[in-house]
Length: 415
Image (cartoon, rainbow, N blue to C red):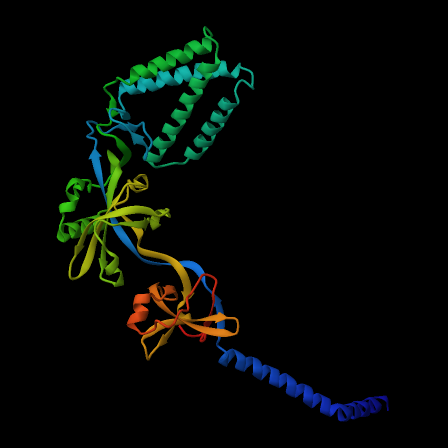
């Protein structure tokens, strides 16, 4: 009986409120339909004009042409003294031949260092915070060097440790009193090192530049001193040989770090109009994640098939000492100014001009514009010049476009 009573109550409740239910349902359906139509048919949108920029650029690969001087070696067993990628001056020691006299030198230095270290252990722990810092760096490098199989890398670690050890010895000498045993040992060590620099086993730099211990047999393919006289076929030859060579062997060469060249070969495109010999362009070395650097286009060869561009580079050469090719981004043109979405620009078919619609209170003002430059989605614009207005008989239109103006995008879905 109770279940029947509840059922009757529900039936009566629905009968009494059926009108309310229908009205509510209609309102819900109406709201849904309105929302859908508003999304589909109300395509107007307001955009605030801001400062921006548009770049015309190309991502490509460039040949790196450098001035490289190979240091001739008289013996095979060579020990690098200067770290890979470091700069050296003329007559500075780069490496040393591994001979019996050099081994004797190392033994003597090692013996002196052990004697100095024995005396250092007897010094107060707070003798010098700088010495403690150097010892920590030496310990860290020693751990990193464990497991290295590359001869070059092993020598790089050794050079760094030797340099830190020498700094520690010099610092100890400065802190030790005259006449002390440790000071005497340090002075003898320094004297012994200076004498070793006149050894016939030393290999010295014949020119200044950056040291590399990698030879790939391409060092003489390109003559940097004659590069501006190269034809497109000469450049094609360089591109081909640079792309095919995989040689990588030990040797010593010194690279001029003041000037090199980046050479690109690109198919014709809309960017051709921006290529101008003698002009400087911003270039990013994308393979090295570098900042933009300014490079002068020193030679431009335009053939039927493509463009050849030779850029002079005076920065970041240290990062390219072992690169024959590198990925770069050339920014052919960049324009800063009033940036608006491309779909905010309309076209007057009758008078053949572009315009935007500026919202001024409850008014919609038509502003004729000139498009300075455009990308796929953004344009840099400015108010149409008086000269262009005159040519189109628009002198009576005094409307302008300014920063922070609000403009109407009538079709936000338009590309």
